[in-house]
Amino acid sequence: MLSDQMWDSNNSVLFKKKQNGPLCQRTIQAVPLFFVVVFYSLLLIPHQQQRRIIMKTLLVFDFDHTLVDDNSDTWVIQCIPDQCLPDLVKNSYQKGRWTEYMGRVMSYIGDQDITPDTIRSVMETIPFTDGMIELLTFIVSNKNDIDCIIISDSNTVFIDWILQVAGVQAAVDQVFTNPATFDKRGYMEIECYHSHQCSQCPVNLCKRKVLVDFLAGQLKGGVDYQRTFYVGDGGNDLCPSNSLREGDVVFPRKGYTLERLLSRQSAQQGEGSSNPRVIGWTSGREILMELKACVPL
Image (tube, rainbow, N blue to C red; front, side, top):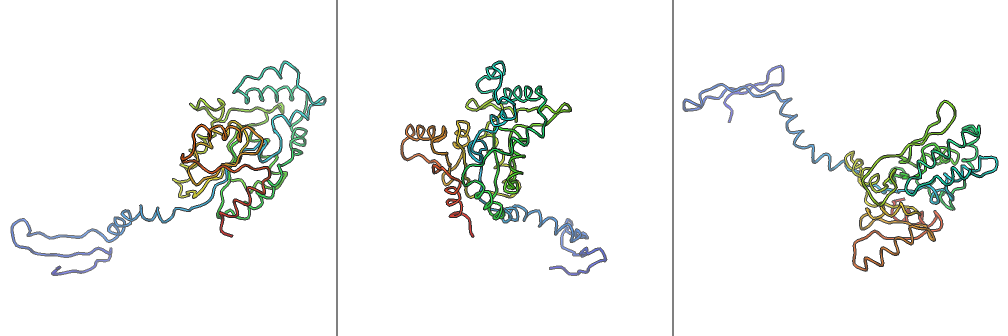
């Protein structure tokens, strides 16, 4: 027990206590209360961080033949007067290097004196897949519970234009795709999104890496996802689909490549493996029904 105690004007506890023995005969001045409070606050930080974790549902969309009912990269050909590329450009494609090919396509379009405004007016006519506007509208109305990202091999300009004209850009939190800009001549330039080491994916984009990095970043920022819905159609959607956990859902579009690849993979793995659920779809309304069952209304 303290034999003597008082508070000074700096909120320090000052006290003296005499004890027996040569080593104990000393005067002790306590640290200011401010430092005591800081010390205990630091001890509580891990517990406070755990309490601040927000649990949500994540929707991940491919873009071409998923959100929109065509390929935005081939849709742009409609802005050319005869809607046809010369063989020199058309035959320059190399497997796995679509982005470089699209750079040559857009360079040819620029050579034809086709302006960015003309390109935009064409891109804004691409149709959304049935039910997708309804699905995106629901996401906008439930942003407290749902996050939504796009991972696409298209480009930033096309996706931004198309989302804006439909009035659904507020549904999408982030878009991961190839960066595109117009230079001083009005030519569109497209860059690869990133480089990676995945042997399954095109050289410019591994959707699995994008998704895994996004989830890690969100968790670090205090957001975790109780389930992830992945919606896609193509072969480059298989790699990210295989990163999903049990309890997540992958939605392959019926009749498209992803559905066939998942079916073949499932047959090879057999029963009993821990995989996400697979639900085929033809309309965004089918995905919306599954989403509504998971989100508190």
